[in-house]
Amino acid sequence: MVVDLQWALFWVLFALLGVGGAGWWLGRRTGRAPVAPSADVALRQLVREHHAFVGQLSHELRTPLTALLAHAALARSPTSSPAIRAASLVTLEQEAGRMARLVRDLLELHRLEMGDDLPLIPCNAVMVAEEALASVLGLADEREIELIFEPAAALPRVRAHPDRLKQVWINVLSNALRYSQPQATISVELSATSHGVLCRVADTGPGIAAADLPHVTEPLYRGRTT
Image (cartoon, rainbow, N blue to C red; front, top):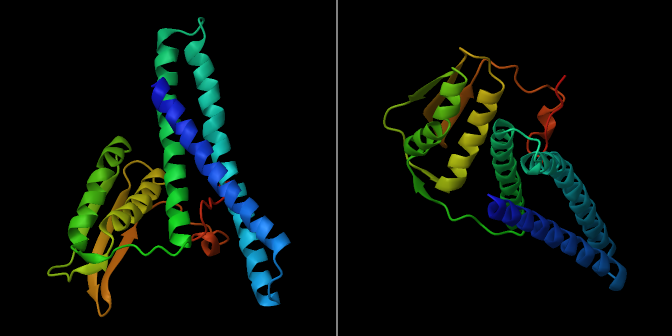
């Protein structure tokens, strides 16, 4: 557990240093070479977006880092009971996993922003959706929420990256499960359209606030709850 935690922290710091280094390089480029006005505006915008993204990431990492430090202290304290130490180790593992996911998402976003194209292949959307549903079935059972899957018959294959498509479904389903009350129902429907396959995910949760809807595609954006 200690080794896993050390590696998680190492990769978090490594990713942050890499992003910070990119910002330093962009800043040096801004100060060194004269560029055309349009290019200068674009570069300054890129630097602003970089700073905003790092600020968001730092905000997101602050909570798991605080939890890691607090529960590491509890686990090491000679006055902690065995039950408290066991609970702290579980929390340490969960928060380390959360940080690892944040770093993974950061690296994925960076790769996409650099223009790397994902390899797209013909995929069976029903099969990918079933795998995503299986991944969140344990959480659904724990929260006593029913998952309903309703794919239309004879759906065409879609060109997609199966892992990323599965990740999108898992993210949407996880949010639906997290904000739905026990005994609720979450349905996933797949239907054919002239452009491919349409997916609808419906739940009985509170939904996304109107003020947050314009920001749902922003990296690491999280709506405020009241």
